Amino acid sequence: MYKMKRIIVDYKKLNKDILDLLVTQYPYGFDEEDDIIEFALASGEIVKAVKVNSEDTIYLVKIGSKLNQAIKEHEDTVFEKDDDFVPFDDHINDDEENNL
Image (tube, rainbow, N blue to C red):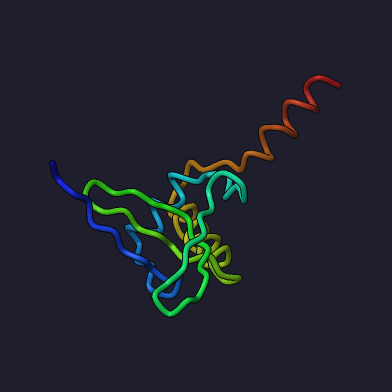
């Protein structure tokens, strides 16, 4: 049986690959009750994190006040490169206008 690596990662050390996994696995954000886990470090510090899985590693990404900003900046960078991206809100507004 193959044991996956487990790595605790602070938002400051997230690379593009982990950010891509995070955005893909949590496209609508984190649910405090279902997605966020809490554990104690050897130092006794209580940490909140979200689990992100890759093929061979389970990342526990520490949740801090700046994690959401890092995700938003990453999404903005990804979507800027996608010429066909149409914001979800634009579709809602078009549909509402057509039904009036």
